[in-house]
Length: 151
Image 1 (tube, rainbow, N blue to C red):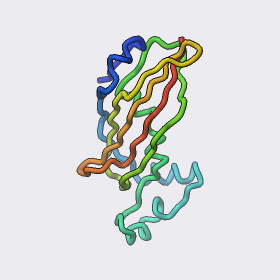
Image 2: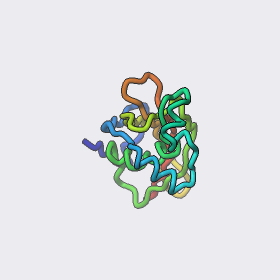
Image 3: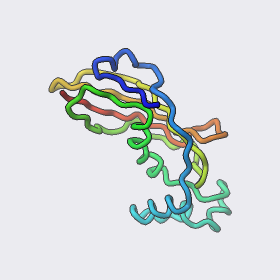
């Protein structure tokens, strides 16, 4: 279920979880497609045989691929109403603490970290996003996402 928050109520949610998404997995064809689209053809992502001999034991998903799923997965968890327009303002503290094996199940958890007013009558809110890997104590990606909303 998607949590819907009115923009005026954002401050009341600071420090709270906005929810956790469903488990999903990126398959070989997904990773190969991302590699082709971005030109990131590093063998650790696309060469099954060679990647199998490295410490991770299999190809891993590009960190930027995982991170690029943030908007899609966030929409499945929460939405903010009451803005005329919402803008992606950027990211802070992006980290990839552990590898995501191709085919590994992961999900996104979101916490509202901060809310503040910005010039022009807008509101900036920062979510703390954690991509967790099923069966692992270390997340595969963490990022603070800054969004600005205006009337």
